[in-house]
Length: 398
Image (cartoon, rainbow, N blue to C red; front, side, top):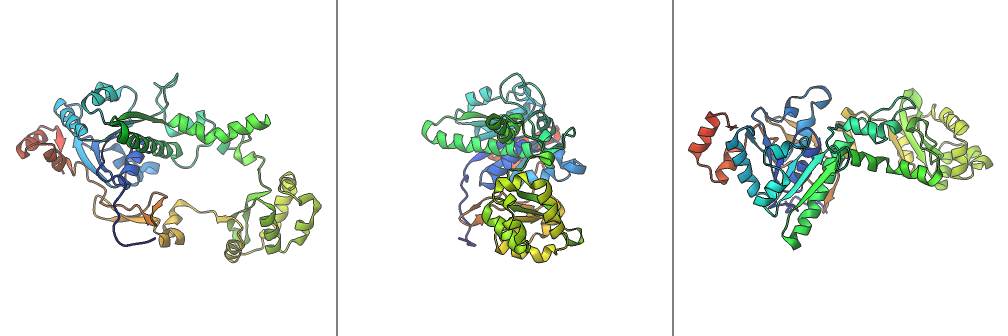
């Protein structure tokens, strides 16, 4: 169902106070915000440092901080902490991802906030859950090295991190999942709950299939570039003009279709290639043989044939090319995000639809402290008091 009529969002009426930075905590807040929660991001006076990152971090802030308000305070000042505490008293959810012990030093740990607001759901995003590693600091790349993902991604002897912040993003997603479960349970108990999500355990989940491969077979999984594939045809091939295409034929029916499309009945009739397992064992000569056939074919002409005949395929695409992807453009997978300066950019949306509708950016990316005054006024602060605190450098108003 598609409709231009605005639909009520699932988390309307839920207030979230987010005190986080970088990717994992902001991802949790973004998911809750996209689902309709009022997310108020607490930033330092100079703003979340990801606003100014260069290089690979240049897009962090705008990607993970949509649909949020911003208040800007100096949390080293007691008056600022008092303001944050009043805000938390009005909240349903508190999101944080600071190093272990930091929230307790500010009086913003779970036990302190629960005493003030028993219904509060408190979600922490850390490097590790409880255990011997819990006080370590971690980054996405650190846990990829620890939890088998880098080993599986790179060739033997050259562990390689995944090309995006997979654990940070998934860790934030699991934090949001925990929040949703706790909100549901609160309906019957009236009580909040402490939720923790962590990078390391997230990455271990990503490696679980390889752990279980070893448990089932007794054979350790090889890194992806040197793996024994579960499928006979599951590879990247070079077609005419050097165009790269990934092609898969994971069962007998697609294998027959592929042989027919490529006009290679000899391969389909070859008794050495009768089953998928036969084709797996023949990959050392079968893949080069298919490669030689494909090298003379036009990828653009082949793509609609593969699509019509249900052969999984993909062109090898760079991230910047996704702005022009026809599916994303026509299906509404890219929302129009207004930035702090009033300019706009296409932004990938959450990969879900609800009654056929995608969850859109509803407001511009907030400027540093853009909502400080309005939020504090709602909490009972008078204009003169807000002006005094701003003049004293305790908070920033945009």
